[in-house]
Length: 482
Image 1 (cartoon, rainbow, N blue to C red):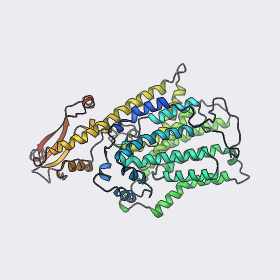
Image 2 (cartoon, rainbow, N blue to C red):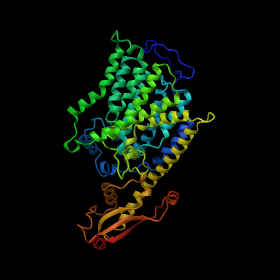
Image 3 (cartoon, rainbow, N blue to C red):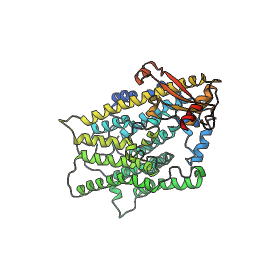
Image 4 (spheres, rainbow, N blue to C red):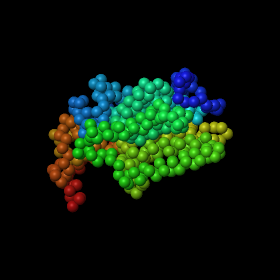
């Protein structure tokens, strides 16, 4: 991949450890990436037609077009939801397989992006891409309702790639259009800073020539205007309905929580910059560590700002990012892999012992293990939902259900809780009424507690979860409460 003769980047000497442009995807770690990625994220392919979480609210027993109505009310872009609408006409399986393929395709795109003057060696790039693929984040991708995030993720990295790979005016315009389309997931309005800085770095020679206004100056201005243009367009053409006005709105407490990590990253980057100006050498490992931390802070800022990550049970909001029992909050980890991958590589460089990649190897092993465990939980949840429907059928005309409690969350992905609309879907499939008014409103009813004596490993081996209902009359519940 040689640079075009009319490139805006002036020729510079490149150190021997820098990556030199080669043919597309030359050196990509195909075998390790495919094998480990499939072990980590291939579980949904075993049960590709499963609905999870918000899927039961948006897609179960409803025309496919209903999802667009919800998107419109939320103030999401008009093109949001289009991809899953097309795929769902083929079946839920089409979204499941597309998700699996898209996340892998993004790693291929990132591999090419990192070839362009990022100061990373060929080996570093391979490790970063593997970590990017395998770090145990964003398990919520299994849900159809998250597919819009997935396509935004793909569009963002594709736009970034076109921006730094090709130098014609048409390719620049195409990159801007693709990046603009990715803003349908609003966190990318902040993450656009990365391709902006990368493009500026590649064209630094022209940018630093302030005596003459060049096309590059206008292009940089154009990239900077993109998020502003999206925000203005949203307010004019697809604003949220009154019920959704406060959704994802930044709060003072949230902005402060998200700003502290960003400021720490800025301080670290400033120190590196000052040392560079003074021609002092900074270890590559430390540079990667600080850059990775800063990118991770940027990735999380919009989610902290909108208080989508908050502290509870006495724990600070920062710890909730990495909690094991994350329910469906892992969807807020969408942008984290790149920053985390660079952070791990930086730590690995700083803590190398006898030239061995101890940190990277440890993180990869733990990542694959966690991915397989959480993936198997979603696999069991798929079976659990089917078996719960059959269990509900046994109550038909026998039990008047006042409420349902689940004590088998070990069979749910990231130990998530069933929402009311999920239970409504299960009960609808079972052919029983979905009303669960509680014992106060239905004293003649009963409380159903879902239980199982089957261990996680036994359930995984047999796919029989041993579910049963413990039934307690509301009269007993009310008597105890009184």
